[in-house]
Image (cartoon, rainbow, N blue to C red):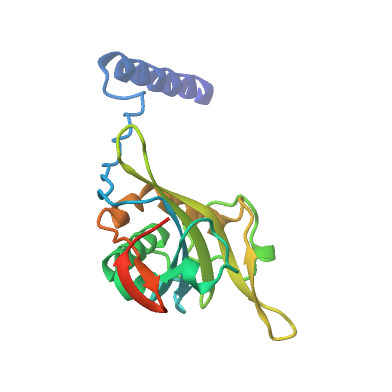
Length: 216
């Protein structure tokens, strides 16, 4: 008797699915609505940006953020004339980057956070978890402009985490592509173009002082 009822339930479920597919009311996932595009400013030049963010005790991003724009290729060891502190001349873009990163990394579950040590995080694991608490992360971004449309595009080149060694020295260690924290930050690339829609060209240095705007 139980077997007959089970077969009847399965037949009804199959019939319902078939009907939904036939009428277009179900069975097929709706197409994803594309994200809006944002046109690059007239004086926009592709560039690398190093962004440093820190998490609070609750695993959410703190208000502290630093960003360095590079003239030419990205090189942390580059001389000062190849770097510009974004906060010194373009706070609007800096705050927009912070807002987008905070939105993407936000999770409503306060009791679930990724382990602080990268070695303790299972690679490839997905779940509704917040970033590790009280940690500092460094992201390298590449802001580009699409040639065919002029729309902005941003790529998260790498994500690193500050690690304190036994010697007391703090070292920035790049996270693997499968690290869930790195994956979380890299998902932000889809939403970061809007942050650069009013990006300012960096000031040109002359005799150690800022002068006119210029870039690569």
